[in-house]
Length: 269
Image (cartoon, rainbow, N blue to C red; front, side, top):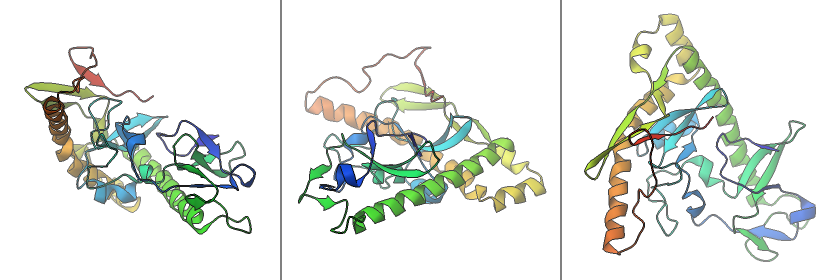
């Protein structure tokens, strides 16, 4: 079973079935603690206009494709947008997180299968939460809504992959070396990519029209716009450090070691 998301967040996906789950239910998502250790979350093209208003966005290279992602932390296992109590502190929540604990996966036959993470803590017994199936054994209204939402995301993911493949083909994606001020120090991040605005301006008319017709222009411009938010990550680290000092708690936010003169690398291949 292969999850449809480029970066799966669910380690224990189980296909939803009447035999296994007919007498059970689930609680709606009320905490984003499950994403507290996920620094990069995939985005689809249709949500980039909203995401770009508050989140830094980059590309990563994975499985021979580029994937647009929300950059949510300076450490690979720290999401600065999830508060210690599980609250999301940003203005926009990526769609890849809003379907939790559900996900679509592909069976070996190529068929889409609705799955859920049974370790999410959101699975309930009969009479508690929302039922998976109604009295006739059919998917409940809530479950049908979840499935429609995930199918929409999957269609968006496929469309986004096609756009990113075209961007790469036209030479419009380049490495994005990042330097962020954290406290009194500078941190460098490598392994992320950005749109190449200079290459975009040099496209031939034919290639520019091809990109426009493919829906690639909004993706390029949204990513470029969202780059302004990258400094927010450093400020969030400082806020966490100040809160920790006030509460006299340890460890400090950067308790890991970096190699190559403090160069942090995101390597997702």
